[in-house]
Image (cartoon, rainbow, N blue to C red; front, side, top):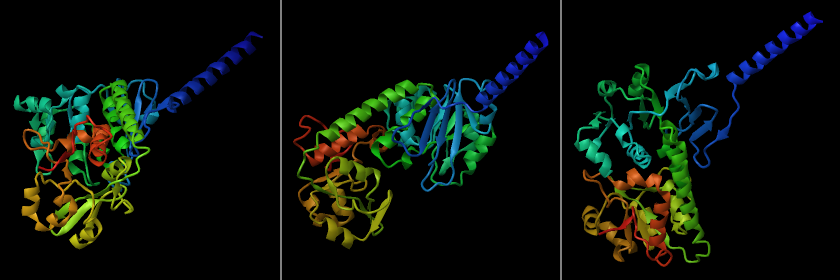
Length: 376
């Protein structure tokens, strides 16, 4: 009897250990944290996060996978194939101004050690640290400088890339510096792009703060949309400008086109397929948009005089004649960086309000535009 009891006990322990080992190797997903973003997946487990970057650049056939935890000691063996990032990170080199905005929002400015092309940064707080030599330039033509990054030895470099050929990032990864790809700029929906602040929330182990910030932005965005439910008159909207004889304008499924639609405007190329830019002739644009009510985003022009001097054909549009042109390039940082490119992706609620203010002036009577302003 005792021998039978002992045998049963041993079998029970073996089965229990086997179950525990299997569980450790294949943990169950506790929570999926992403609602809108298409190129980002974050899963929260007991003691660690998994982060999947599925669209690091347009039309990418590559995905990147990261496991983030305070310690790698208790991680399942099945996750060893992923890049490990110890959180919270204490030092970072971001490579896009959109990264700067999220870091500022989460009050982690002191972690920034370097950045390529410092003049692009508009944040006054970050510029103060640049002036104090606490953030250094790490640019090497169009890429990060390998030696400078190694000297700074950041916990993480946040990679912005437009293609699969990323030699410098590959070298840094091999040198022991974790490279984490960020594809926030590839997102085309306003809330999808803004949700990437959760990417930084995980890196800094401040996910709750990031999620709370995003929730407020989401609420404000949807509340503003609801104000327009009974709008009947929808102004027509044109966009873009000429560069080297080609008129470039957002395609019908692009980020900017989403704002026009949600602000109850009629974008004149809303039926075009794609998320990038249309390449049009002046004649085609003039035929379609000569009588457009509003012109939003005329390149980087800040005044009507600049536009006329650049190309007198601009003066033939009604939006030019009646002074109905609005630009996101007017508000700039101390070194000329465009604030819109840095901060707007995180604040679609404010962009939408800017659009509503322009298209429907009677809806937000006391509102003052933040990013998109009337041409001077």
